Length: 123
Image (cartoon, rainbow, N blue to C red; front, side, top):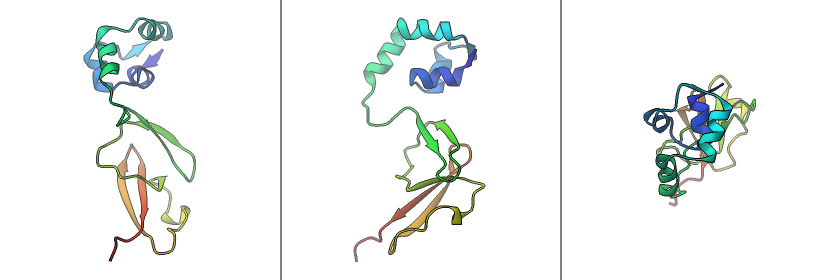
């Protein structure tokens, strides 16, 4: 049995959509295979509406320890230079390149900090 969240990941749909369209909290592999082989109209429409600009799910991986987590990306996330679990120290990722500034963003996924290194704006 797999969870609704795992079904949403595999179908590449939001978790909210899975719940709204009656995907049970637990589902067997055979049921999922049937859904993929003969998708309902709502799933066909969802796939047809995709622009490809924003992924439904992204895989976050800690650059220090390798822990991974699939999450829904947020519009406000910048492009991260590094992603680190919140229990790692700032000294566990490489220093920013000479002349670059660093910003950290808490609250990425369930336990990550996003780190962005950027060159200063033009003078």
